[in-house]
Length: 68
Length: 452
Image 1 (cartoon, each protein chain N blue to C red):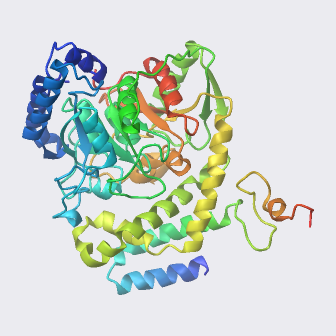
Image 2 (image 1 turned 90 degrees about the vertical axis):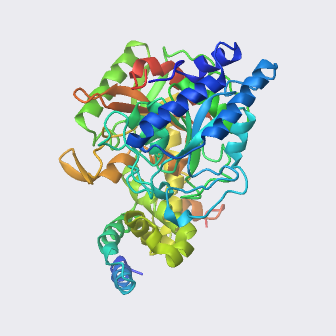
Image 3 (image 1 turned 60 degrees about the vertical axis):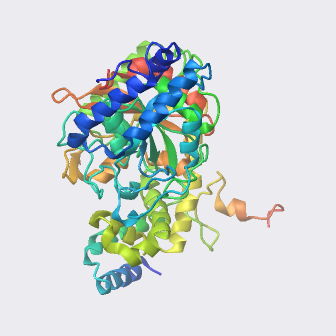
């Protein structure tokens, strides 16, 4: 789910629940989530991204011991 | 400061020598509470008769040669997030109305076993979810030096009780800085031990992976005494540490970038005194410090929402509006983003470990601003208007994410109002005792607190 889709859906649900004051907080959270998702240590299925959290690159850590 | 002696160490020596009785000291503290609590709102519940009973028992035991250790007969307070058998644990919330704890929290049991006299339960930011103590069903706790200011939070009543001479120590909790922030704001020593070091059983959770429990005291030595009891071990004084040649890492970028000018000046002056004493101060880097706030937010919101979901649905109106809305926010987070935050935590642990390597401690301010006025929601730092909450969490929350032990110590005062400022020392993981040794050595060079 993209941040925009998530945010639109969350605002709609908050309004439906009578929690309109959540909107500015959701917008702030969306910026925070965007920062989290674009951080350079993230991992994804492409196998090409991110610094591993144990100090290796993700690509290295995902590689089999024989280098495959 | 009304009570004399001033520290637990001094008091316990006098109690053991029977120069003073626990009943006398407890009576004195209760009188101080009666005089000052209407202004400070530090206590939600005062346990006068029970405290006096416990004090008399302590006096009889000491007289009978059954001395339990340095907390024996010492009056302390307990944040009202911590269970005491037979009493409500309000968590500062109407949501908890009718709750009665069926047993003591693990830390309460250890304090009782050590002979501590529990004076009462202290005010807090509702469910410990805030830094100013303004959002409490019992009204805000207030700063002992200026009742128009916050004592910090969430353990604000705890800090006010110790700084104002109502108690010799208090037990607080710390999920993003809730011991260290009020300690800094009130001129106290506040210790967040290493993660998982002290049991949390019987304490209302905020964030299951970042909650810690620890003491607020008037000296590092006192913090070591209480820490020893909470840990379930000996309450020994920290072994001496030689400051000369001790290497401190200062994480300058990010952490020193947004400080009130008076905080920056006091911190620089403290660093100069430490350097004059022979300490070696070296700049270190936390390369992904900019990711701390997003990682923290996704962890704390998710974990808090999981705990509160049922009550938000059934009794949402019983929460204070600000706390309710932030708890509701956590219900919208996606699992995939929580997992990203967990991954980020591992990176930050590695980066703090790397910054610590070969050094006794990291050294940085504990709180970027002096105690804020109640009702103020933003503060201008480095040309940017920052939410108060973000400014107050900025220097402490990293070590809740990573679990490293950290202690706040007094570090001077503001020039005009005389408001306390705080420094922070961070130790290696699982090395809280060593951190306390370093902190005791550094304490005289960092600056005076408010309470002496």
